Length: 170
Image 1 (cartoon, one colour):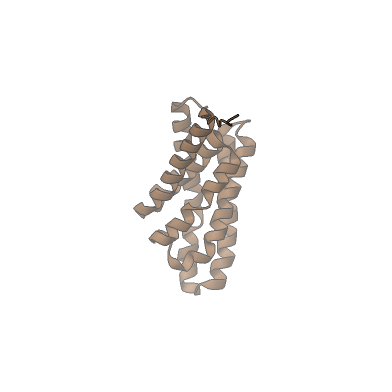
Image 2: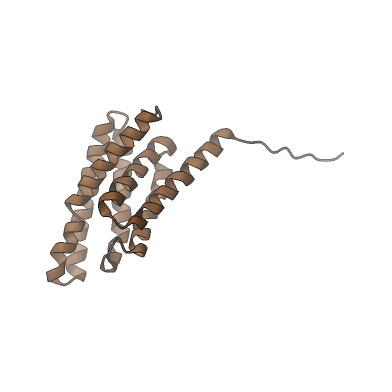
């Protein structure tokens, strides 16, 4: 008696994989444009979209690459390399803040996630930068890790909302 293997195609897993690859591609390609005001909102939008479409665990996996690529292509100055782990953690905080509150209210999730991300990144950048960078440079470099992070996270929420509304996932 011969054994026969049957291959099955799982449509849901294929769609999830395609969505993950697409979001990963966008989130990793956008830092190549070297514009924080373009990169930040798009990456943040991809993270929020990933939470809605793929779940928070997959969104966290997506959060690992964009800041590393931003450093590699020069969007983040090399002097900020020690900040990469903190940027990644801030993205995870953003994802989790949004994840836990979005069911109550999408905008509450975006706002709380954005504020938590901003607060964590600003606080850690202030400490790390003051320890590693000359005092003359610390203020200008820390500015990059302060209010622009809040604004780009909120803008990412607007982009994510528009996209998710368009594809009828909200």
